[in-house]
Length: 305
Image (cartoon, rainbow, N blue to C red; front, side, top):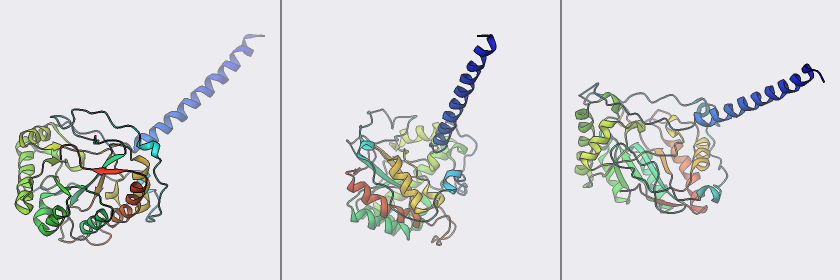
């Protein structure tokens, strides 16, 4: 056997191995594209006055979201019990520099959360569905919307749900100094307490973009920072069926599920089909919540609530 006969098979093996590795990397890249963005660590000294801040434009949905099935709310397969398995280990989340992304309340226990409300149209619809299935949730509210819709805030509390602080004007906290962050959080906590007599103990940063300043202010104000681990990107209106599929695919024991029941808009009432229209979230909740209940999931509040 000459040397060419030896080298040629080796070249074939090497070529095949490289191709396999590239395919595996490609699949990993697709999975990573749906992963939550890392939390910001900016000190945020760019601005000291959030009072005139407009809500920043949200990031464009991923290609996966925009190409997903549009508006059908067809039920996705029920979650498999194996996906519910192990309770996440206890951790020091909630301390300065960390945000909770899981709850620790036993097997098949999860938390539902709703951001950017209240909304006088869609929040009552969410409350109706939660009541039907006996589920308690947490609503992270924008201070400006609390001022606009105080009756809806009171309805949420009267229904037995928990209210969290989601800032006053939904800014990018990385653009604010520590004093600016404190004004956003303090003003929101104050108006929630004045509106319903309940001072929030939980905080979620707009977009989940926590900063060192926000952690420091939360520690000083006695607020526990809460993020999530399941994000169906319902704010991008990808279709109710897509929202259902993403929730049922990603949920597991300890999950904190992010939904949106409102938005910070110029108008007092969000128009159907607008950026603030959360009807797809409502339609999806009607489908996936009973499936989770039937699969044996239980619902709780974030740790420390």
